[in-house]
Image (cartoon, rainbow, N blue to C red; front, side, top):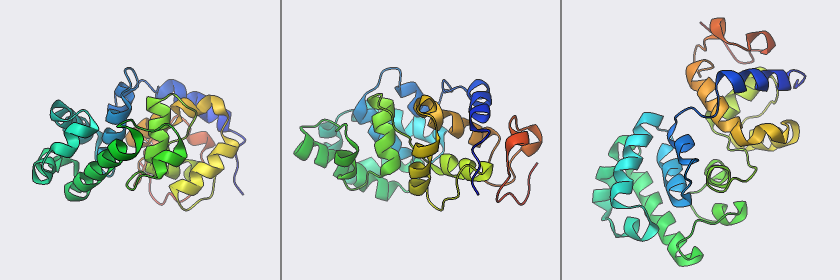
Length: 218
């Protein structure tokens, strides 16, 4: 049975320990949000390390910081530019398609609504919510692998996919935590609550964690 009794205590501890001001690529973009750059950086970040995303994004935006400029880059050149982000062939095609859709259907602007964002092939719930939250300051919960794994470990939810985790969290997580939830949990997940062998011995919330699914820890 999911337990959220200590949810506020846990979030308050993590908010102080892992502030949302951590210098990840997308967090930095929140200061001067450019919806197109947020969208593209998010698409590049899928299954990639943040340091790689930062380097690749910076490299790409020097030559293409608008949908029009991106569509004009030859596919092979685009693949070369984003190579180190991983899965570069698939990502290059996605970036091209998304940019063309923005030009064709949205007057070259990144749409603000979940429905419109999800109507573009290549944009999923996580990316949609990151754009809405990081670029437009809307209340949304971007759920990546960290934000899916950790609430399950804590016992807040019992879900199989990030999409189902998002649905559950919107019902149990107080909205005051929504704006910074992704940034805080991602930082915590990278530093302490890692996928394999998490650092439970130095975890600031270990006393509240149900450790569901953890077979080995440090």
